[in-house]
Amino acid sequence: MSRIGRRPVPLPKGVTASVAGNTVVVKGPKGELTHTIPGELGVRLEDGQLIVTRPSEATKHKSLHGLSRTLVANMVEGVTKGYEKSLEIVGVGYRAETKPFGVVLLVGYSHPVEVKAPAGVTITAAQPTVVKVSGSDKELVGRVAAEIRAVRPPEPYKGKGIRYTGEHVRRKAGKTGAGATK
Image 1 (cartoon, rainbow, N blue to C red):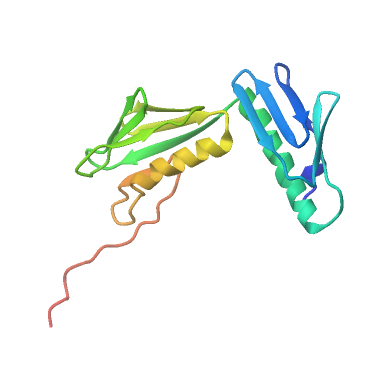
Image 2: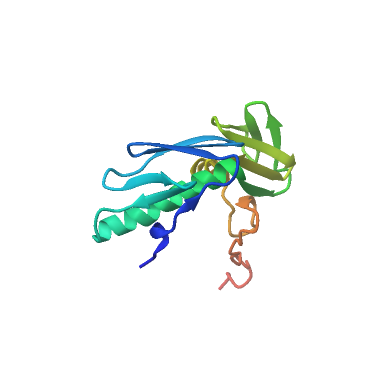
């Protein structure tokens, strides 16, 4: 079993946290995040550190303990450094354009696909074939990146589509065409 939940979450300079019941609010240079942890667990602020505690050694409490501590640590990292996901667009004529509301994808459909950025997330097309999703909430950044990838997932024959930077797409061999006659 992991012992992640026992480690305290240190608060760097410029980051403040407040705990009201089971709601944790973390404020920093990149914004403010709020999360409510499960009712059985407790959170307290001591000496510039957030400490998550569990009531018993039950398996459910142990798993929630590690999860809640990691979510709080992700909040602290999000308001200090932020998170970023990068996607590549592969295909002839496939491209993205930055707009004030988010990004417009031209990925082989008869119409352009508009992706609107939710509050707290920035979507930019640094190059016509690279889309960057950034924000302070790790879950929200990951969800928006997954929604963009779902517009045209990479296909296994030519590899065309939208993929995460560094993602390996397993390729298949196509039909050969010869030898089909009897």
